[in-house]
Length: 231
Image (cartoon, rainbow, N blue to C red; front, side, top):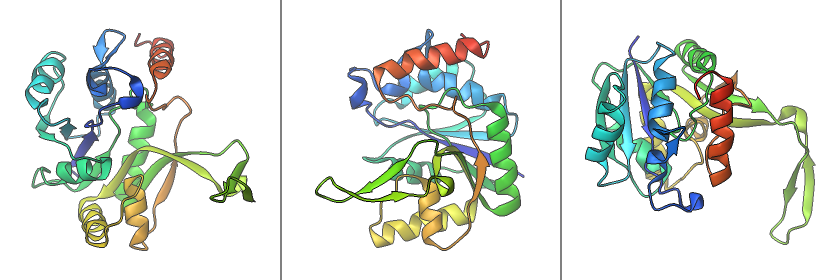
């Protein structure tokens, strides 16, 4: 089975408060995107990578990330779209012809455990769609437009979705095409598959699999990587 990873890394990272695009920010002296790719490569379950980067940074990515850190089997570097969903779609258009399974992983999650990547690919190969997630540990309230609580959601049924998420190639392409036709924008790829009425398997994720969103997250990620022996 041939697995291609699509890595959406086209976000400007406005909340980071930096002029450098988030994927190229240093994390322990290494660009965030390179950190994530090197971690994924350790899983040994990915055959090719499609990197989706801010338009105009393709050559910079090729030099400062792929060449500088000898990232293996990068098939294509393509410009992203205005939102994450559009960027993933751009990556899907560049898939190698022999791809059977597509793994989507946020460039901003450099601390993902290798075992989570492996388990997600295994579950998707078996079931067609899988998403790493962790159980909700806090009480979750649903609120109305006026800011008042409508109800308390049953915590025991709630999971917090992460990436990686992996899907059979044809299924993910169908889900994205249907969402585009309907004008639907989801917050992750699993939501697009769910709209088709197809089951998505939950794979236990990890609290260490943080998403770098704010400046302080870089410090947290650096500590996690150091604790994992990759500082």
